[in-house]
Amino acid sequence: METEQEATSKPDTFIEARALLDDAWDRAKNVYKEAKEQADTVHKQAKKAAVDNEGKQRADEAHKEALEDAKKLRDSIVNVGMAAFTEFWRQHDSDQQDALAKSKERSELAHKTLTDAREQADTDHREAMGKAGDSQARREADETRKGARKQAKTDYDKAKKDYEAAKKR
Image 1: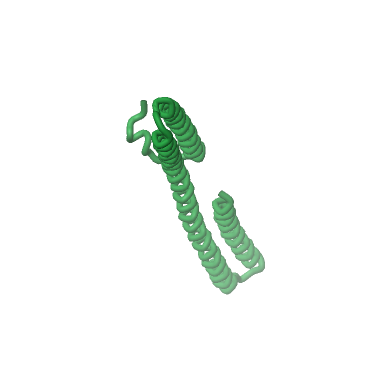
Image 2: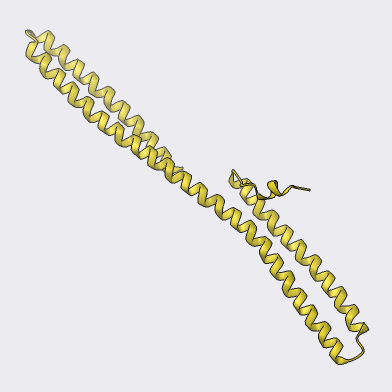
C-alpha cells in the first residue's frame, strides 16, 4: 500500500506522469465497477423486500443516486490524475522555456564576443601593419588576423549550434 506522500509526489519524467494517469484511470474504473456492483446488489435486494410500488420507487431512486455518486467519485479520481499529468507538462514546458532563454542569452553573448574579437583582430592588424616594415611582417600580421577571426567564428558557431540544439528539445 502506498503512502500519501508517494501518491502525491510529482512525476519527474513523462513515463512516470503517464503511469500516474493510467493508474488513476485504472483505480477510477475499479472503484466505479465495485460501487456499481454493490449498488446493483442492494437495489435488487431492496426491490425484493419492497412491499408496494412506493418502496420500489424509493429503491430505484436510491439506486440512481448511488450510481451518480459512483460516477462523481470516478470522475474525481480521474481529475486528480489529469491534474498531476497536466502539472508535469506545465512544469516541463516552463523548464524548456527557461533553458531556451538561457541558451539564447549565451548565443547573444557569443555573437557579441565574436564581434568584439573581430574588432580587436582588425585593430591589432592595423597596428601591426603600421609597424611592419617589410612584406614578411605584413604577411604575418595578415595571418595572425585571419587566425584570430577564424577562432572567433569557430567559437561563435559552437555557441550557435548549442542554442539550436536547445531550441529543438
